[in-house]
Length: 216
Image 1 (spheres, rainbow, N blue to C red):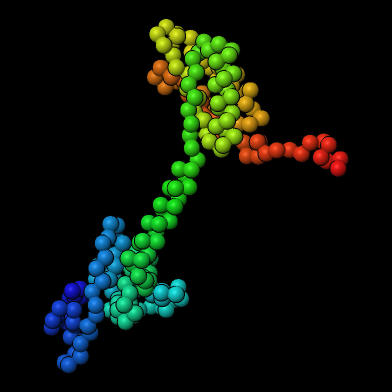
Image 2: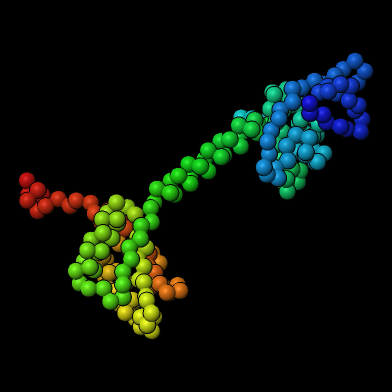
């Protein structure tokens, strides 16, 4: 059971505090798994706080003991949300529920980020015309699906002595795909590879009405 040990109070039994002879404060303990530095309930060291209600209303200045009582009476937690303020700001809330909602929001944000795929297409610095056109077609399809595309030029052996050949391929590809993609990351050499990142231009693949359709 949670116990608040204050100099002027003595613990009578688990979960109950004696305020005065014959008067007890009893509350159900809320067990919360915490993985951050936010101070809640008995962890709050301030002697007073500016209190915000569970509905977001400003309740004013409270002694920390009285603020804790407000939270206890609602079966909720007292959470220090602005520890550096003077006095600190605390809010009455269900901290476990709040943390769960925050975790779900973070998960949804990560999910949305993962939807933006990054595909990769590898080229050789001395690629022939047919192979180049085939790979360019694949890149175009990736872009049409909304994916970013990492273009990798792979150098072998003595090809590293002529990085300009790889750069020429990347510049040629960027120019060919200019109506559909922007260069998000300019060509750069990393080890034995030269990399460039292309991002699709929004609306570039939208079907445009033909002239005959516009005349109708």
